Length: 102
Image (cartoon, rainbow, N blue to C red):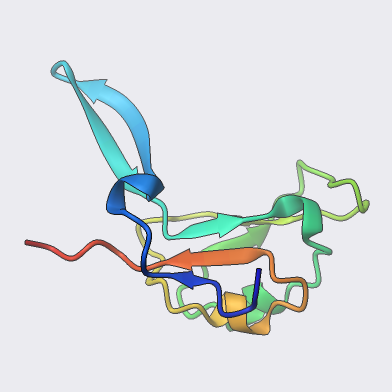
């Protein structure tokens, strides 16, 4: 995986997460980031460059390296700008473009 892990060729359905059923239908929410927490060393560089402040260290989790990994706090506010992926020395991010509205 490279720092420029912007995946534009994946399908929209690959990055939808099922949420609670409403009226018999299941709503899906788009996830703009995939984070590999097992590789994160908690350096906070991504947190410092995020223009929407939607990244934070997950203080409830310690990975196998002994660090608190980063987590996405608000998927809806993430713009998929990929600043986090560009600055991350450990390439823990895969950034997906939002589906185009039809």
